[in-house]
Image (cartoon, rainbow, N blue to C red):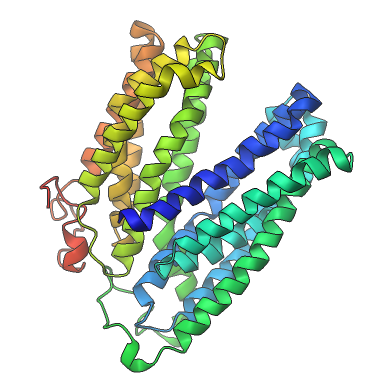
Length: 445
């Protein structure tokens, strides 16, 4: 699990750096309006990715279930068809509405709209990269996606100063550099993907893996030709498999915006501390998401996952300890008064442990056809967290917001660990043994 998760962690951290911090660094000399434009564009791209996330997630799961047992071609073709449809459905309205969208987020909306024209117009390239990497991960390969992220990062580092300052393109240059870097990386990725799929197709029957039962009954298996390989039925299965993860992602983004609004009421210093603390904490939180992808990949492939719950809880405790140890010196690099950010990181120890367990277990739930439970648990946690945040903040100040986050994470984790047969619609016996106990109650197995 850890060997599989390590490349994913590097990929996730590298992607965040490439999209956000490098562009922000190079445009910082152009003034506050340029910084705001890049910040807003990064947020908008993040939300757009949430709308598309169901496709790469569903592909990873379905490719993992089929690899070495059934043909991969129909699933991969369904993924690319979904990419084509959703790229148009998301990109065209976003580009056409770039000016009103920019006006919602920034007073300097013209500059932001200019950035949107390129960054939002380049979303299909970004989405295509996630599709290709999703297929590779489904085959158990997390190293190549990591290398692709590192290549993209290096290209952005090289192209940003050239486009922004060398060619005098300013803020638009940052967007062009990012899209160009992603396009080059995508070309490299498609070559790697083609080779990987060719190897899968050329595998001799004697080398093929034994068939492992799917964790959930396939609605396309044995269906009519209309829902056959590469048809609409398979595309729906990809979306249905990945949709809970997309819903989880978007729900977290929406709640994050609500918390920003709430914390802003306590003053600029507290809001800045929250923003700085979140950016620092992100490097640690990526550990949990790397574990989730590792659990998702191994579960989909019918391989043992050990205990993602305890691994996630342990990772949460380790991340909390590290963040508390470095809180003072690291936050001092970003703010003259680091106290609000340090306070945030101190209280997050209560949040990170249950959150780490929840995210790691989520990979097993998603790949074993129980993603709906994960989404329901996430929403239940937020249903507790948001009212509690408003109630406690009136009594304890901003500390009440941090405590509400910990309470919401505990509720979500408890919901994700409800015994499988305790609710209506439960389906015992669908999953292989390697996945059946991995996301169950905290028995330590």
